[in-house]
Length: 93
Image (tube, rainbow, N blue to C red; front, side, top):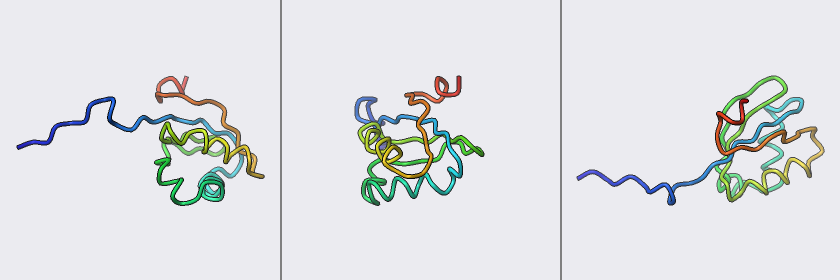
């Protein structure tokens, strides 16, 4: 007997954030951990999508998006959220 798949209304909704700044590979995770902690980071479902030299795309849970954005604005690191989107296709345009 196969399991039923989740309804679209029941699955986790994600938001994709386009970040700009220097030294993103080290600073992004540290900034989020410092502000919302390990439990908050696990609730946010943080995931790297694309890493570049001065830009990155991350994925977070929709309910925790405001906390993640607040962690970047409250940090001393120079990380700026350029754009937020519900799909990667719209974010890459």
